[in-house]
Length: 432
Ligand SMILES: [Zn+2]
Image: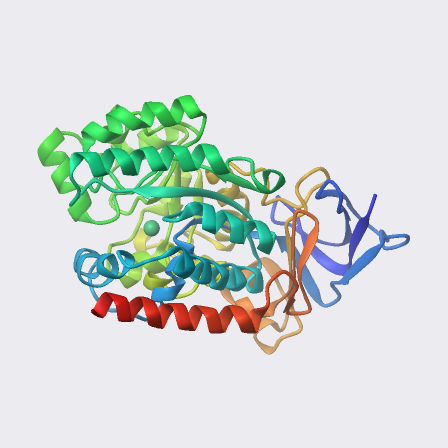
C-alpha cells in the first residue's frame, strides 16, 4: 500500500465542524484511511497543511467546461439573445481540437481552485473524457441534446449520440468518469423526443441531467402548451427520478418544490450565471427547508466568468439572503455543504466528505492570508472570504494533482497558449 499523509492542518468534517487532525490516504485504493492525530509516521508521501484548512474537494454540479474558450467573448446580454446571437453561432464552429484546448483550460482552473469533481454537458464528450482522465479529476459527463432548429433525422441522430456516448464513457478512468443522458432543457428539446429517449436512458441505467426553470421564458411556453408547470411536465416525461438533477430552478413555485422534495430530484444552483444573465433569484432557502438536495455549479465560463466554487459559494449565500429578504437565510454552513456533499449527492458521486472509507478528494486552503485573518471561524472564511488562489494542494482519488500551486498533471504554460490559439481560431471561423 502506498500512503499519503496530509499533516498539521485543520480539517473540515462532514457536519461542518473543524478539528485539528491529519488525514491518511491509501493512494492505491484512492480512499481516506483515517482522520486523526499523528498519522504522518511511515507515510510514503506527505503534504504540509500547517496554517491551512483541509476541505473536501469542491464538486461543481453543473458546467460546460470547454466554454472557457468563450470567456469574455460576449457579456451583458439576456439569456435568449446571448445564446442565439453570440454563443450558438460560435459553438457551431467547435472542433475536437477546440474542445480539447477549452477542456484543458477549464480543468486546469478547477484543479487550481480546489475542484476535484464536476458534472458537464457539452459536445465531443469522448475528447472531454480523455482530458479529464489525464488531468486526474472525477466527472459525470454527457452530450447535450437539442432539437430546436433541427430536422427530425438530425434530432434522432443527436439523441442516439447522447445515449451512445453515455454508454461508452460510463466507468472510464477506473470509474472516475461516469455519464448521464443530457437533454439540453425542457424547452429546447421537443416533448416527443423526451418521451422517446428518456426511457432509453433509464434502460441504460444512467441519470438525466438538464436545464429547467432558468427564466420566465422557460416557464410560460410549457404552461401554455401543456397546461402544467415545467417540473410537473418533467415528471410526466419521466425526468424527475431520485438520481436525476437539473441546473437553475430559479422560477419554481411551491407545488414544484413539493414535487422535488417528494421525488428526490436534485437542483444545481448556479447563482453567478443567474445574476449575470438577470435570470432571477432561486428560492434556495425554501428548497432547503422542504428537504430538496441542492448542489452548486458555476455553469459555463461564458456566463460566470470563472469556474471557482469558492466564488460560487459566496454568491449563493449573498443571493440566497436577497431572495429570502432575510440575512439569516442560506448561511455559511449551507453553502459550504452545497459546494461539497450537496453537489456530490446531487450528481450521484460518493465524494464531498472527509471521512474514513470515502474517496480521497481533497483541497488544502492556505489560511495564512490577510483576507483570512483573524480565524474566528474557518467555515465563515470558506463561504465569504477565501479565494481560488488560496488553494495550496489539490488531491483527487488519492493522487496529488497540485502541490504548492504547481499542477502536476497538466503543463500550465502549454495549456494557456493552446487555449488562446484555439479560442482565436474559433472566433475567426465564426466571423467568416
Ligand atoms: Zn448550463
